[in-house]
Length: 67
Image 1 (spheres, rainbow, N blue to C red):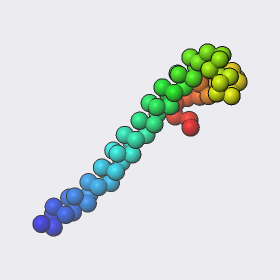
Image 2: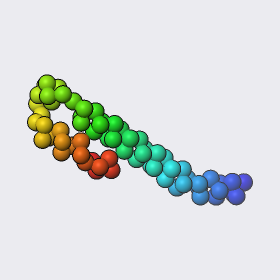
Image 3: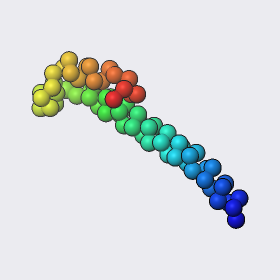
Image 4: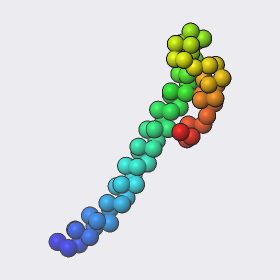
C-alpha cells in the first residue's frame, strides 16, 4: 500500500505540470485568435471600441506569448 501512495505522490507534480502547460497553450491560442480578429477589424469597429488604428496595430503585432 505504501508503494501506491508514494507512486501517486511522485506523479502529482507531473500532472500539475501537464495541466499548467495545457492552460498556457490555451491562453496562447486565445491570444493569437483575438489578435487576428483585431487585425481584421474595419475602421468603424475600431472607432466603436474607442481605439486608434495604431492601438490595434500595436496589439495585433505582439507575439502570442506576450500578454
